[in-house]
Image (cartoon, rainbow, N blue to C red; front, top):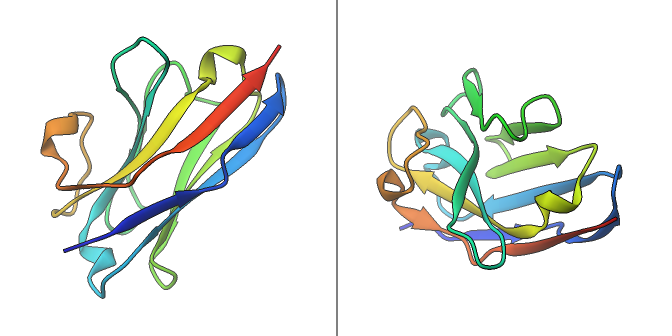
Length: 124
């Protein structure tokens, strides 16, 4: 069982930055690949980024590539999402998720555990 708790969301102006954190419980964090997803009002939840167990492999949605960076610290059981050059269309609830394998996925239904989400609001 893995519990995930996101933090770091908030209100920011367009062009600003935020860093989201996702703290995981359990001693086997390093055996999980991790992902970030988001859900904007009235829209389906969508893939943002994922990272492999070691942090050596990452993948990003085209909409955030070059602006967002996913990383992890296995010693701290934490995965991060650094978000720069934020746009109003980045406004959403951001969720982290864990999958019990070494490599991440863009497919939500492959993830085993989910956090409760953290709100990010970008004003224009």
